[in-house]
Image (tube, rainbow, N blue to C red; front, side, top):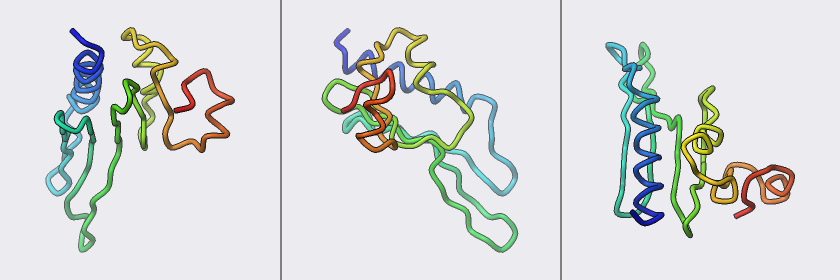
Length: 111
């Protein structure tokens, strides 16, 4: 299996596992979105909280240039460490929501 397909499967498995315990309620739905053609993966929540419409992204991951980019993570999950535990080298993981100067201070890829 080539790297892109391997990483795509790992990301899909992680996000599916994270949402396995259905986080949806009567009014709020959690959706896992996989755009495998363009290598975009998200977990979003949407619905009504009383009179307020709620729609936000919990997790956003992209695969670009043979690296997994964690673009957003509003959960308590350590996605980067989970990726490492599944065999993804740290040099293939980018914490995209950190500015480039901060990425240099981590064990992960700069970009």
